[in-house]
Image (spheres, rainbow, N blue to C red):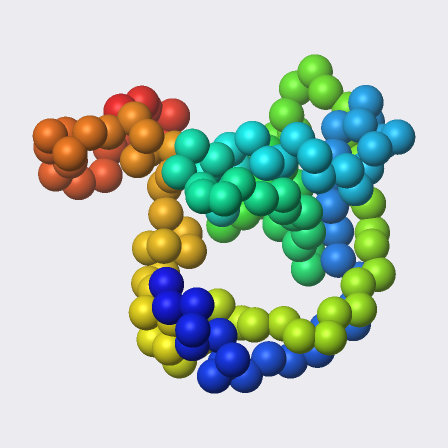
Length: 148
């Protein structure tokens, strides 16, 4: 990514309700991010991040937040297949955000300016750690629960 390109990008403001899902046992520290520096997540791989950093995950949709936290299992495309994650208590928190400068990384123009790809934004970081350069991946596996 070309960090020198950041000043060339167009930003917008954002003031709206966003959502965070946490386990009920974490309610006293609902917006704490200390653990995220070393915890792998969808958009962050602490084993390759240099420097490591903290993240606060929020979603603009409560249903998406629940899928991201793996509170709901199944496919959002087929709502009848959704089941709640067993044996845990979860809570959806609503947070009012007011951001002065937001960069839309889904915009192809922003991606081009930063010399980055959709793969970098949505990559399978856990799968990258499982595979080696010698791993032969010829196509998708049968089912999301199959390992490397």
